Amino acid sequence: MKKYSQIYRLNKSVSFVKEILMNLELYGRYHPLIRSVLLKSSKEGKYQFEITEYPFPKLPIKVQYCARVLENSIGVHYEIVGLPLHHVEFQYKIINNNDAEMQVHLDLQISGLPFIRGILAHKILKAQKELMDNIEKGSCH
Image (cartoon, rainbow, N blue to C red; front, side, top):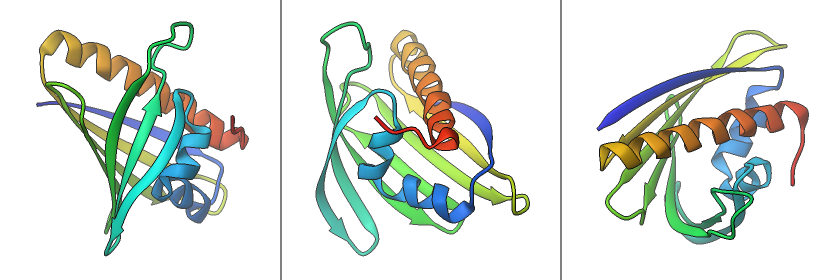
């Protein structure tokens, strides 16, 4: 399993950002590659969604997978299931610096084939940067 970390600084309220990260349907509106999100199940604060994503915007390649979302004491945890030969987990830690700025710490873990793992990490981290930029600007698609 390979781990990656990133820190994003946003001039948004913690509650605003946490609402987006907890609600994957809302999250999908800000994410540059996600085109549809369907709630499959919810039990005791655990949610499972079916996601359709176009990882290469100029190519008609569609990827579908499931994501489990769980709020925990430090933020929001995502587990991606259904990707062939790979396992992906996100942990978003939300830190309130002051009224004007907050931070989102992303810890990403990917297991699988090293070459594909590297491509996945690059695509995910680039999309996360765009996601956070879109949240900062309030820009949905």
